[in-house]
Image (tube, rainbow, N blue to C red; front, side, top):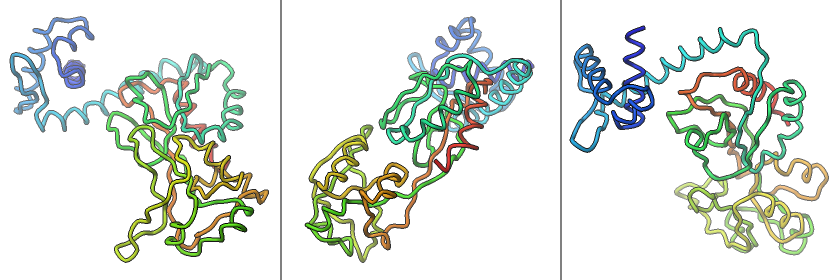
Length: 295
């Protein structure tokens, strides 16, 4: 247990990049933090921090050790939480963030709410890349591959991105038969809120077939305008298939260039690894992984 205490001190100092801040979090002095780090370094035979009069930074060995220690402490916290909460029903506020396409998840979240009525859902819809830890989210659902080492992740499922337009649009503008044909079409483009970059369309571009310079008829940072404009016959959009499932079934939209499009986008649920997996987070993660797909 003494070793775990030292690891906790190290993790707090490593995350805060400050012995003073770590001491404030733990209710001890900065000097006590420094002494605990020195003892840990002596026991391991490696320097974990570069120290100066103004800054404290992790060494490469310290950064590697920090990631392993986070996982160790997370497991300990999870074990303690399981023992403490085995007899209690999941309850309390659960703050989650979903991408704009997450409006399609509402029936599944309604089923989750019915199953766990004592959990209060606080839902944020945003396509921006939220900072899960800094903004205080318990869990988020996001597309793409996880890259934040501070977060735990489980894969939920995947779906294709499809290139769609209304039959009325194609009757007037013609159907693109190859990616290069898009240069003569009105393209409804998506801009990532977090980076400002335009989304690239999955057209299997290679050295022999370079990226197509798509003419922008409209640019938006959320999906709804793309779907609306496409349904109104105002252009072609590249959209997650689940976002236009109904429109495709009803024939309001049709897909094109399917032979050039074999990419899919993955969905993951993520939560802070440094936080114990409380019952409300545990049941949410398990429910989402088991139930979200197919919609």
